[in-house]
View 1 (tube, rainbow, N blue to C red):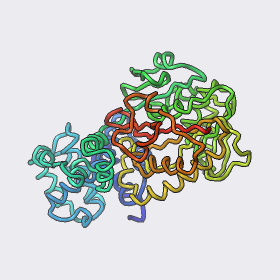
View 2: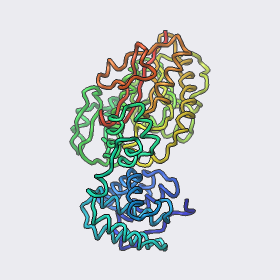
View 3: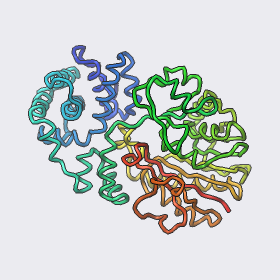
View 4: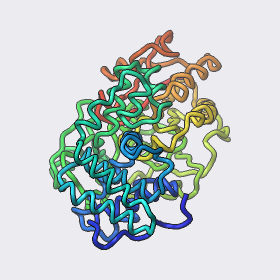
Length: 457
């Protein structure tokens, strides 16, 4: 990693490319999150350049695996052996030449060379030679021959770590795994949840400056069909909506709280599901929203205030700890931290950040939070466990282990209520009467969520 921020790009370089180059360096050299790095670097760009910088940076981060394969093919040396500025220039230039198009090849090559030069390092000659060869051969010659008959091949073609390709190959089957990895590299759907405390979806749709369409299962969902500056809109300030994936909206719908219920929401920040529960309860009853991180808890409280969710009480506490009041809640939501493998489409850098051994550690923490949530549920109550990942270790295995040690809980047939969202291949819960659901990005065009509903007898 470098010790300081990347040096400013040459003033002759197109602003969007200079911004994207700096983002790549922050992500891969300093461990920055791509979205945060982009916000920090794009403050002086106009809307058009900001949009292009986002496409370049996000795409080059997502496609790192394939781009590094092409770099090694054309440069005839390991990508990791190159100086970081040279590698960032090559990744950015290759992404634009092979995947984006639209700009003249000479402009892409010239700017990439200037970006490498601006860092005061040698290697710009290599950048020039590799990118000129890539421009001559084109995407057809360099990308189309890539196969995906095996997990290892698919990892290169679809730019995922090999361990993720092998995991999905094993758990979903080859066809689903290929389709999922391919879809992860496409722009993700952007959905809004109309805050029914203050408005409804048809009214919100009529007030928005972009066309939308709804969802047949989630009345409050609106899918945007064009770009929209959410945080700059007075509708956002008035609490009329929250950006939230349709899969995440299914979680509160699955819990189905009623007005007057007492609800416990564990690991509640950033508050999308918490405030959705409040809306479904018409603001009546009580929601205790638990968040261990004080800063995130404060943000959650502000979100609840903006959306008029006045029946939400935010509590800074450990979700895995036993509740002092005992089994006092009608409904409990356990939405613990997870590996996030269902959100790779929207989070460009996550696939390179998450590690396979983290899933086992997370599963232990998830099981502890699930047990704590179960202890807080009154007899006859309902508990929903959800994650935004596609991994049996954190999903089916956690639920199977819980049911084996909690005979007073049973699994609802949630899949029957949400047709088309079944788990797919047989897994650890196949012998149970009830069924959870799993949304798959390539099938459902939303984030990948595992949702299961349990009842206490």
